[in-house]
Length: 78
Length: 322
Image 1: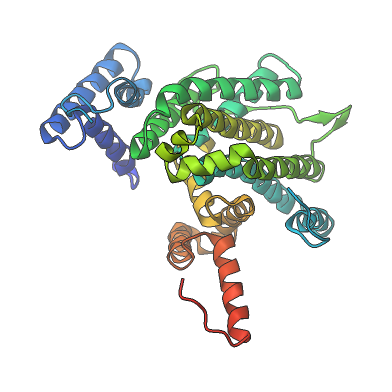
Image 2 (image 1 turned 180 degrees about the horizontal axis):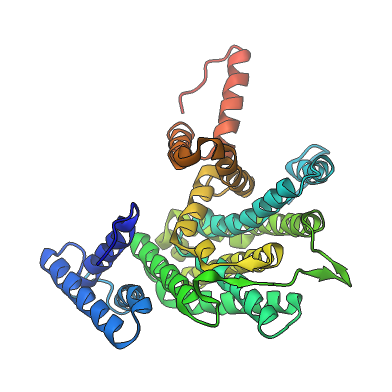
């Protein structure tokens, strides 16, 4: 259950951007894949570690992707 | 920095600092002025990184928070001397900036923005969730700084420490900008490739200015913690990073005095707009939009341009269309 608040879109938007980068900017299939991976990883983290740290996972993935493979999973060579 | 004549920005700054202290007797006003000083410190650092070197950071609140929390935790939980805690805060934020900067500064444009943003949000969530930071309710009872046994525990006493320190930092930054490093930074901003071809070690320079800018933020954070004696994670969230970027842009990119004006404007404006109650944020956003549409180069440059335009018109000249 999630409450509706006026700034709930900010976090969603940022995670959406993370998903897009994870999949590879410019690749729509990558976006779908990135969103799926981040969503599953978040749920796993809140179950296995702690629900307080759930939001950390998306951004940790974002940092790792940016540092190790900036073009994303399905992005071609830059 | 060369001081030209008696009337230059530096003497005006010194005069302003003394005058403000003489005119303001109210603790609320003095606290507000102190907060402006702390924000200016942050904005000058971010301006060196954004305005001069052209590297964006959307996670500067994290370095501010690291400085504040290191100061807070070491003084409250371990009873350390506030000045030592301040130094430790600088070390922690500097090391963090160094470690995150090595991989992050290889990225450009919005990739760099996203990386720093991600880092900022992670730090915020840790500050909010961990038990040793006091969690969402924050840390209270942080001791004030003292100078050889003289406690700096009132806004009036802190005022001199903060603004004297700020004066030194501004002078240091203006000198840095005018130096060889400063010219290299501007070359880097225009074109990284061209700067490299002129012998500038751009990756080292970017890391240097990133860490330098984080040190300013950590210093501001420690001062903030010892000024308010209380810190909570919500002061260091993502929105504060955005606010800092706004201060840089409103004041003027690549302008030391713009940083002061931008920080002052965006700190005072919400207080003045409190009369609008719930609609404060709408009026605030509206003012920002108007400023950016009509003075896109920031307040300092924009106002100077207007003044020069008026003078030119008075002399009967036709102003060259910019």
